[in-house]
Image (cartoon, rainbow, N blue to C red; front, side, top):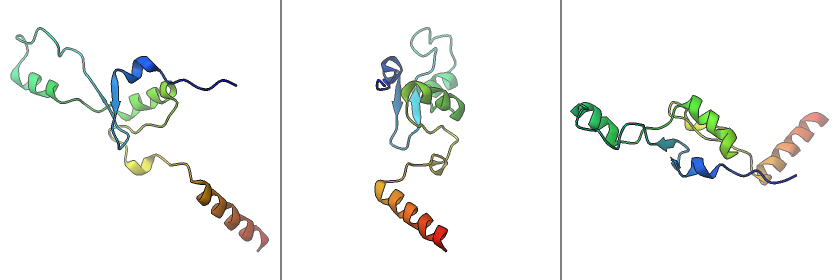
Length: 98
């Protein structure tokens, strides 16, 4: 079976932070700024983080787990390391014997 390829066009448009949140650019920031108010222009300066629902949608394109804005770091379960997996298997085996 072939390997899964992440969506390269999407990777050029977003940035994934170290904590797993997704930064993206919003629409309406480049030109025609004279008609927009000062508060709106100040809000445009900072890159917003993507919501959890949108981040979940992008997981399918990138083939990896991503964290949303209102999702805690503990919400995403990490895959156990081989040592942790082996220890859990041994613990389950001893519990089964008893």
